Length: 409
Image (cartoon, rainbow, N blue to C red; front, side):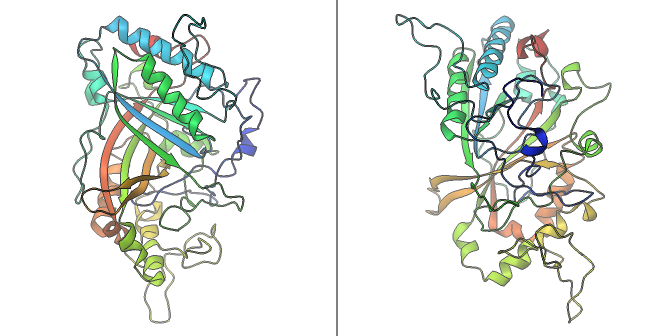
């Protein structure tokens, strides 16, 4: 956090820890409730690129997401892959400072930077690299694909194989949508011949001045009980990886689970408000748990109504996703809403939640939580999971290091 352009303190940025998502939303804070609102970063803010952990994980969420996945070309050599990753490092470090990607600047040469972010400043840009099983399985890499978990099939999944998986991923987040898009565009061009773009998902958050968790496309406040990124014990236990079996570049890294979740928008909108609130376990207007009065009130899962029934229903998402119901399991969620036009199969809006979550062990943390939600969560009836991926997120880089030397030394 020593970058001279970092204009906002970490404490000031943490107006909320992170943003969660409904659907595969799981876990919550062990201590005081943590609000998950939108970061106050604006165009002048710079997030340091070089740090012990990659930015874009514990960073307060920016308003816009561009999540891209890439495949390595079959004939790419190890030196070509390393060179590309080195170019990605240099470009990312420059773009997060609001500078053009380095390269030719003469009028006679094609510009290295397409110029979409000129005059827009850093805009709080973070660029986070993830590594997939296909990267480690590539003949020129010679890694260990088993390092990255393969998630089991979950009931109701309708996964698009193109949107799922991939060799590499780039999560670019910024306060301006064009800055996030520009970062992905630059890296796509730099990877030409060595990688091909597999998928691109844009996402957004509401820019609310009222504080608290933002509302998702279901109309409910989302992420009020996320893991507390300011608590080292929670982060070390639930998010950052460690262990002798892990490669050096994953010591202090993490794993990201990415799930594209389409909301059955019209079915949800036609449900009575009381049914919606009992499905979620919170009041729609205030975000308060049904057992409380304010958004940050801790849910009382033992509370009963006058008929002797649980105030927070046994099938409510809030109850089933809570650490209290899952042996204390927590994950760090950082999800975004998306709207991609019309679903050609149904004629309905193709809109929902790009669920992103960071954790130390997807098989130990995400899988049992998702299995419980699929089996018992009333919210599951309104959701369709259309893509699923797991990526290893390497530790952060120090100044002078690059992703090429880190991963392929």
